[in-house]
Length: 117
Length: 103
Image (cartoon, rainbow over all chains, first blue to last red; front, side, top):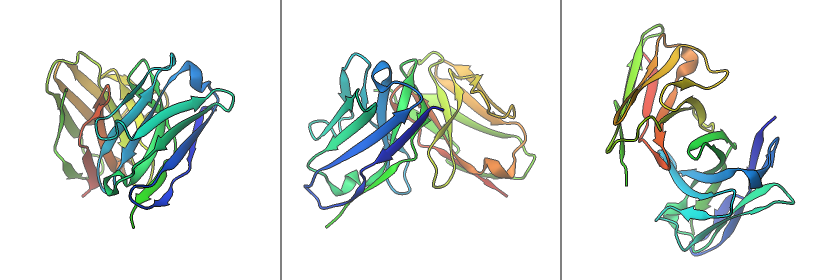
């Protein structure tokens, strides 16, 4: 069964750092495009970052320079390193496999990141 | 950047009603348009890909159509379990969502 399980969320002070993990099963992370999407409380979906199978990475302007997407092939796990966190980064963060370059499926269950003092 | 709009932003309909949601892109995106369902407290779920293809396992009451800049998502007979927010998406841009409730 294809499955994604996120972890690493929590309460963090503004300016702090956090690393999210997304453990995959049923498929190989390194052979796929993988992405992070977030959803602020009561708001819609916002794409955050993508890593292509070849290793290229891209970011939304709102997180560029602060967030880093990466993967560990030996652990079949996707990561999102989040630095210089701001209140507006508060959201549920989902990881998703991206098929055909733009189809997000499946999604993980999400992990909540709260940035607050 | 391509912008996506959806209408309506919310709707209430009765069980058995036909429900239609529209999504418009700011420029031609061919058929690169997907639809997702998100139930409260849950992750989004892919329903329709490439504008009109039903994802495996998704009930046939859901359908999609359109190409270019104008797209339509339809629930032919609304069921109580369809209460959710529906999002269109092209590449790395999601529409603002349409919240569907039961009247």
